[in-house]
Length: 69
Image 1 (cartoon, rainbow, N blue to C red):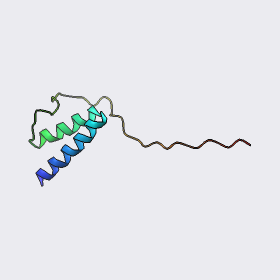
Image 2: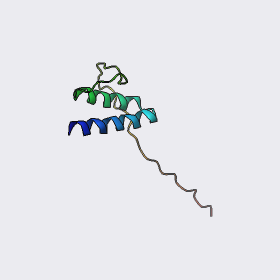
Image 3: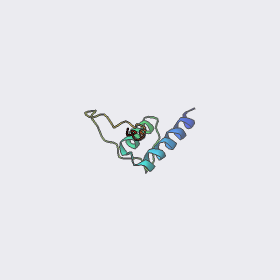
């Protein structure tokens, strides 16, 4: 089970990395380290404080133009 979980985290990390979400990449790296996985591409581990919550991804819907009467 652990190797499947690590593979899933690596895929998730790759997606965040491609989209430029460095905060999310660091969170996944921290989770990988807790499982005992270490690799040279993982971000450096630092002690962080939770002063600011990371920005959540949101889908946006474009609204149509209002009709003029």
